[in-house]
Amino acid sequence: MIIDVHSHCLQPDHVSEASRRADERAGYPPMQPLPFETYQEAMRVVDKSVVFGVRALACGALSPNDFTADWVAKDPDRIIGFMCIDPTEDGYLDEIDRCASDLGLRGIKIYPMLAHFNPADPLYFALYEKAQRLGLPILSHVGAHPNPRSILKYSHPLLFDEVAQAFPDLKIVIAHMGHPWQRDCAIVIRKHANVFADVSGAGWVRPYSAWEALVLMVEWGVADKLLFGSDFPFWTPGEGMTKMRRLNEQVEGTNLPRIPDEVIEGIIHRNTLELLGLE
Ligand SMILES: [Zn+2]
Image 1 (tube, rainbow, N blue to C red):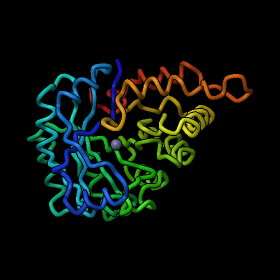
Image 2: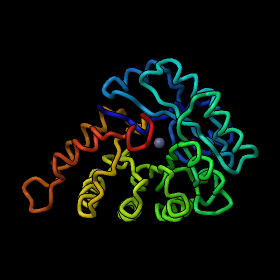
Image 3: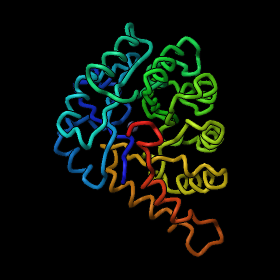
Image 4: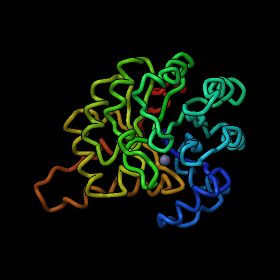
């Protein structure tokens, strides 16, 4: 079984005009509409995928959770929807209840650096308390973000150490292994039984740091806590698997350590749904 734990259904009309203009000034290509058929085609190589939008009031990203639910409804046997929650918005706790009970969304995606909140601030602990009580895993963007308005200090893996201590039964996924702070990510996932990391993007997009990150994860004994994810539409899961399987080509002919093949295949074939309580 192959699970893609990190994919997006973000559309241009989920983002404010001001935000789109700022992105274009920062040099991004204009965002294109993402047809469901394109998503479905890319996901053929995996058995199931987790999908979500982006919600961050401070940066003008406001994907409706109903849109995610409608996306899931087009292929409910193969797609699992997560709600996107910004805890700086009024009524976010009611929105979690609505998304879980009425829309059938099964986890929560957060963007602390875009929504401008410190995820370790007790002001936001009601979010984790509710997620833990309802059995909803939290998947957070952690690490670098190219948006000039993101606040990087709210995107560090160490912040989730305190969250995990306060909510030991909450399943937490640190997206992108917290890149470029993969070493810090390793020591957080080592400490906490219910904290995992996904390899989306960072698992291959910068091949040298991806190779180093996976070697580090093996040295720290946490490679079995890494979950496969693509970050589609930025990369397809097929590209992600191919690029991960080729990381060792960089060290061929040297004495540098190889990432064991069984580690790479272990990530790709991880029992993610069982680990996150989503079976
Ligand atoms: Zn992503």
